Length: 220
Image (cartoon, rainbow, N blue to C red; front, side, top):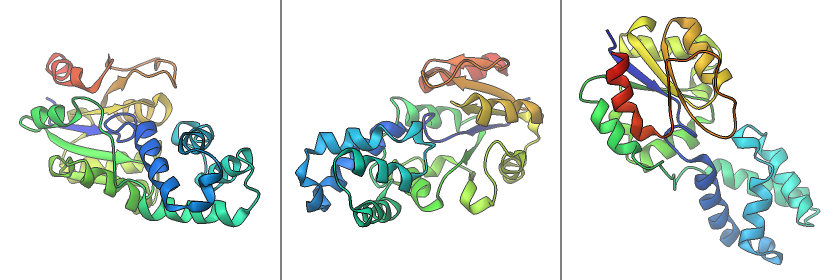
């Protein structure tokens, strides 16, 4: 019997690239020094070094500044500090994410397991209006470990009062989301994307988060 559904955040519920793009366009307006290039040039340069969100952010901003001809390490440090302070305030949800959470919350307890800085991830969750759906929110900076460490999954399961065999995990990264969930005995659903190969073992593949309620019924 499935009692709980656990989600990854970025690239599962929230469109990381569009959220970052929106942030960068706003950041461009705050830093006059950046106006030697266009806002689109700045955004694309920064996005080009994000490595699907896994890059060290100071390194990514430094590399983008070099690409754009800004030689000052001070500028890279300042925009990195601005990122830490403001990022996440304008999140972009994938189409149907809120409706999906609303639908499944009627039948399952819902948890969130996310790698990242607590301030930025909480900002996204609250600003997007989805915080109310989660009975457990486990973010790596707060928990003290990050996916694929099984401890962060177990922390969320404990807060949901669910066993691994009673839970489904939904995520986009086969190595960080799907494999550790399966190794714990959870069911796992992969959100198909262009960044990763399909996992060798999972319990379902969806093209978008809107397909999840139907798949959960099939799994249950």
